[in-house]
Length: 201
Image (tube, rainbow, N blue to C red):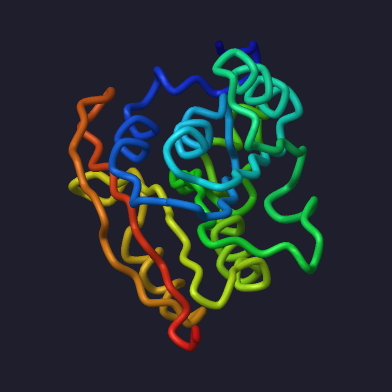
């Protein structure tokens, strides 16, 4: 079910590609940022995760994910309204943190026209920078981050080099887990990256 005002996974194949190529999460506690309809988090909850916390800045998305969980009889999930990590407590840590990032670049001064656009655009890559800086606070020592990304041949759709540079700057190793080209309006290469802290125990 897709509520009005919630970004639908039918517009891009990224959510499906990332979901079906997700590494195993057996007995893990997982946090999904920007859960939307809940498609990935609910899949993980049904396929090995001990618990999945789904968060989104969009209240309608949180309600949408909650209803989809109920429709699929999934009870090892928790849903919250959250601006990235804002709803989390200091003591909360996870084995895996996942975000299908809003990877389309926009000028720093760009103003969102709707809440749905927050699933697409990251003005000045502020969200990415904030995410990479704060994520270690909510990762277990052995934990990992999975980032859903997308690019095109000419790097007009997103800047993969920028992602890698910011990861290095913030002390992460970065590894490509899955990659698949999908025909959207234009061909998009969807990429799932695994990030780990270089100083993790």
